Image 1 (cartoon, rainbow, N blue to C red):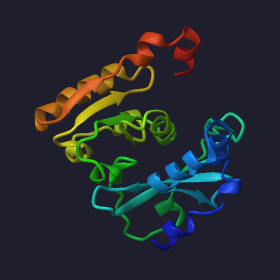
Image 2 (image 1 turned 60 degrees about the vertical axis):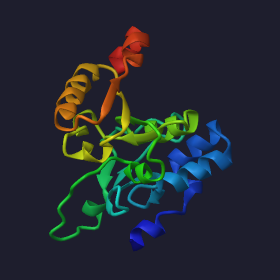
Image 3 (image 1 turned 135 degrees about the vertical axis):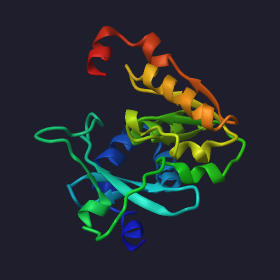
Image 4 (image 1 turned 90 degrees about the vertical axis):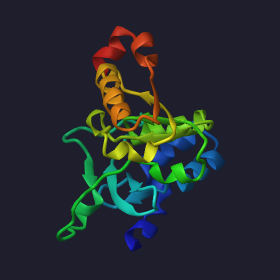
Length: 203
C-alpha cells in the first residue's frame, strides 16, 4: 500500500499523462487518474503504473508500461517496455492472480453497463469519451477468462476486442455465458467493420 500511495505523483514527467493532457481538458484527465488509480513508476523515466484493484478493493499488482510522449504508443524498441510491480519489488512467495483493470469501479454503480477492451490505455481513453459505460481492461486478448468474469455476474457487458480478436472473444463470451447465464454479452464488430487495410496490418 505504501508503494501504491507513493505512485500518485510525478505526473509532470509521466509520458502517458502528458499525452492525455494534450488531448483532453486537464480537470477531466485528473478525475480519470483518480478514478482508475493511475500512478507514475520510477522503473523507467516517464513510465505509468496501472494498478489492478479487485472488486473488494484489494491491490493485486501494478502493470508498468512506458509510452512515447508524442504518439502515446507503447515503447517497444529496443525492447517491449512492460514490467510488473511485484517483479520490480522482488516480493518473495508472491502469487499473481490478476483481475480486470478498473474492476474496483464495478461496486460504484451496479446498474451501469460494462465495456471491456484489451489495453488499459484504451479503457481510460474510452471512459473519458463514453462515461455512460464502466470501462475495464483485460490486459491482453488472452486475459478474458471464466475465472475473472465472475465479477460480471448480473451485468450487461460489451466486448470491444482489438482487430483480429473478434472470433476469439466471441467464442470466449459463449463459454463464459455457459457458466454465468446472467451475464448478457454483446461482442462489438466496430473495428472489424471499419478498419482500413493498413490498420489491419498494424493490428
